[in-house]
Amino acid sequence: MEVRVDKYLWAMRIYKTRSIAADACKNGRITMNGVQLKPSRTFKVGDTFSVRKGPITYTYKVLQLTENRLGAKLVPEYMRDCTSPEQLELLELARLAGQSGRDRGTGRPTKKDRREIETFFDELSAVSYQPSDIE
Image (tube, rainbow, N blue to C red):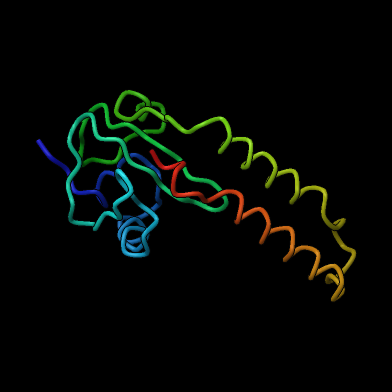
């Protein structure tokens, strides 16, 4: 049995809708062995693929196949998260950076604040995506 990439990503709750999953494929966010996947490509048991969401790249291994959307508790039986600790650390850093920003109700950022925020996220994105990390 084989399952389309967009259906599998939707069924495993990586994306909320199948059309969002297909758009992610078309925009090059889904890769397998360094090759961008099309939505119509199929997964087989044992395939390992990467999903770039935000500042990090998640890596998953297909354990079982299904075309039906699963409950969140059943997902670990069908897919294993193989994301490297370095990528998870980047996620934690991005989360902390968002919390340490401006206090709620203080208004819009000034020009200086905005430039500092943009510089921080540019540096974070330059560190987070490296083609050698995909494998």
